Image (cartoon, rainbow, N blue to C red; front, side):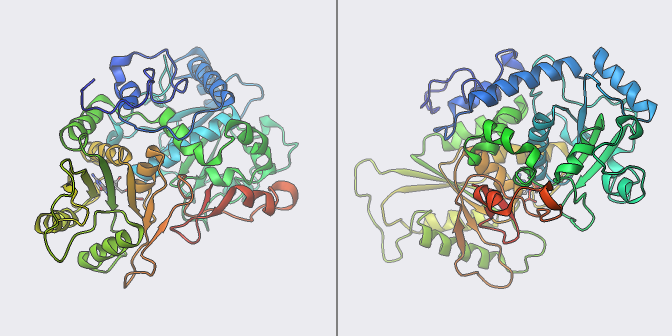
Length: 480
Ligand code: GDP
């Protein structure tokens, strides 16, 4: 341990005691253990029920994982063309879609769904995902083997014959709960993405979950944090309550369980952190995501950041009238970490704090690890930097993040910090320019609501006890 590395907790077996299985080889994934030395606070501990469920899941995954006899048996079943009752192992296959932020949100959501439905989660890892995440489960693998018989997985979409919706519409299957398992095809594909018009709208309805549960193989495609929507399914209600007494803790706990950067990515994080950030008394992360539909200049967005900061007291305020001398012998130091695809905002911050003193007399330093200029999700080294920056953001004490950005959601979600959202600018700076988050959970940006009939969905009043409108996106919902 480096002397400048924070060590405010005594946890040596990973960040959160008990969350990580003791059956791992430490060296193969340093972040799994070392991250405990870097995070200052732990806002939530897992329930003993969650820990028990995770250990049970690990045993199931080991039993059913790739290349085990039971996996081979399940592949035979898949090739047979129909589902089979009482298989030892049932699977959910995660399909990558969009940027890293979206992917981490769907990995966590799919994993929770796997726990709730006793499925084993395997991931279709494309080349751009090589050497990003460590294996999360001991003595097995979560990577779908390359000889998996469904070889058009990345081409599946809303128009495919195998979506749940299309199979229902074409009467290949029915949603009669008494449907015999043997009458169902060997797998089903569900499309749970932002194009909700075409998505599998019935996924969260009880009676449809009963049918979907009978398929041995489920292929899942999404770009959303769909956990809040799982709260609308009566079938999952009790279990979710037992797993997570604090709704706000779900992403924080599951992401720290599941997502661990590989040693090369962790190297980027720790080198940068120890070189530039560790000595600052306070670390302020500012994540600036400028979406393609935003048509205003960087000057306007920078002004929004300053307006927001003045209102919410985030960044050290500059002294326009003179040069404030430091008021103590040991002035506090503040580090501003900028995460953005562009260098522009970093340059503006740097000039501002070079040219002016701040009213409190603190010393302010400004850092930006990279500026990649554009999203290049297809390139693995680009994704490694993006993941490192998400982690660096998560090591900050205070966070100002961009509305709508899943990249920002992961940063504050891992930090366990309620961020201040910079509201998306359309033509002029919105008033107010930013909003304080009420919970550290990510937003489900495009939820499917009110699609079920009768008692196939949780009552509205009950649902609203856990779920509310997102602070940064009007039509989104989040847990709190
Ligand atoms: P979202 O589009 O903001 O919801 O976030 P995603 O992570 O899903 O997609 C954006 C992608 O653009 C990221 O995964 C990165 O590849 C890239 N990107 C966006 N902002 C940054 C940044 O601040 N730093 C780096 N290194 N990459 C970024």
